[in-house]
Image 1 (cartoon, rainbow, N blue to C red):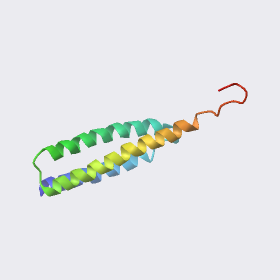
Image 2: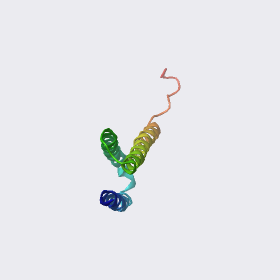
Image 3: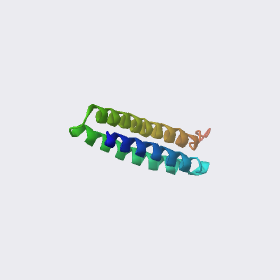
Image 4: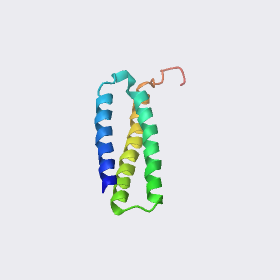
Length: 99
């Protein structure tokens, strides 16, 4: 039970610290920050997969599943948002130039 309390304390602490840090980031730095959170989420996915590979309690597996789903949602959402932002910089083809 103490492991579960430690995990919850780390989750709550990291949520608070992450919210405090990200809310202070200027708008023009959100894309580099998003790529960094994608990298962190990829590490979270690997950690959750390692958790599933070992013998754990059903509670541990549930926490791993939630972590895996949240991290996968963040990675996919990051790629979708980056794609949308990159489309803003594409110019429409010019008339009469054959492009």
